[in-house]
Image 1 (cartoon, protein in one colour):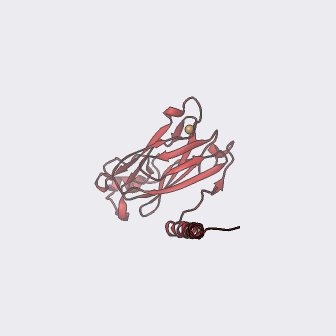
Image 2: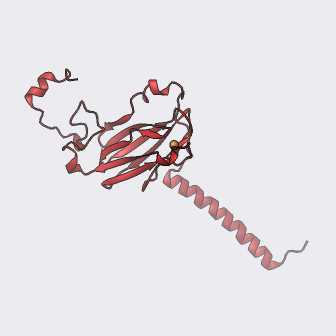
Image 3: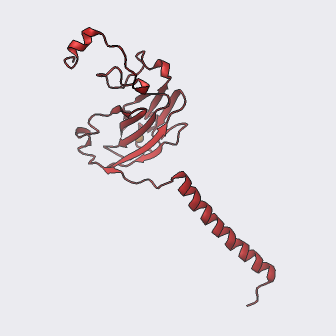
Length: 197
Ligand SMILES: [Cu+2]
């Protein structure tokens, strides 16, 4: 078989390009730490609502500026529906569903996961801008699907201590203060601390 000279050149160029694409793909995956979504944890959809951590969904600060949001996606709402964090926080979302497949897409972020019953889906985002970020379910899940939404409210550091931090651990008023800053607790509170209900 005779292959023309120019044909050989183009075949060679095509092979070089394919090799280059493979190399660039490999480098970018390494650089950006891109991984496939994997099941991080499994749960039993039938019992998850009565077992930790999904028996107590909400937001907790795990370390300075790091939050863990435990969410339930079900027909047809998210629990909690509103997540409030101070600006600059890195929030790890762990979501599970006790019924059907749902999705969690947080607009203007790269949080975009499928929530499959039996698995815990996790995703992480750092909220650098104050504002409200809509959370939507983007997997059709039944007749109430279009109304299934929530939001992440990112508040400024100056708003943190004026009561805007609903959703935070009510037992510790300083839960949302960035930088581990202490706030003055009236003496009267101290004596009853732990005894409040
Ligand atoms: Cu849904």
